[in-house]
Length: 228
Image (cartoon, rainbow, N blue to C red):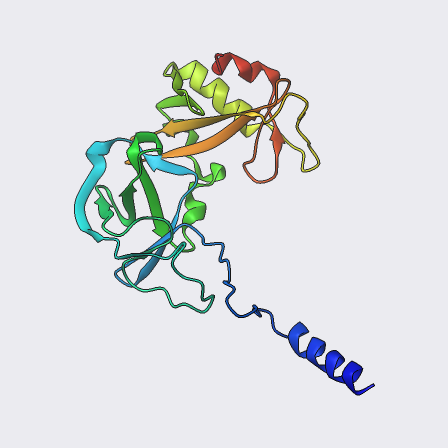
């Protein structure tokens, strides 16, 4: 009975430890893509990309420490110069035409840079914030194939944007996985601003869909803008 009582006490103590780990083990932290600079914590904007490299401004500094893979303490306090995924020495740039945003060169990003905004200000790049009447060009990129289409005619731009705007949200939508993973595209909306708006579109072989908020199904007519 004494052994059982000690065992139950030990289990009760362990169950109350949210971050308990066995000796020699490591806590795995799922980092958000961030850069901290000049006292400000910047988060990556998934719906934004640099419009053109000419907008890259002066060098602000360099990443001093990459936390991913090097920090196992969930109570670690982020310092200036820390970044989630960028290696030490990666240059941090200002962006001409905006004082809030910063950029870090990243080869797999459209136009070559990852864009960061002060935490809490990423929503400016949601689709509902796009000045649709100011969109001048739309580029379509296919995963691992690069740019596959460029839309410049006003009537075609309006048609594409209206299809996005009028898509039908369906949080219960499930894509057809019988042919494998959907094909992934990025649609980039350019205005005259240094930052363009970027939204993914996926195609499962039957249906085009995207996720402005919840999953939304797009009309089949949109296929004209996604050449194979």
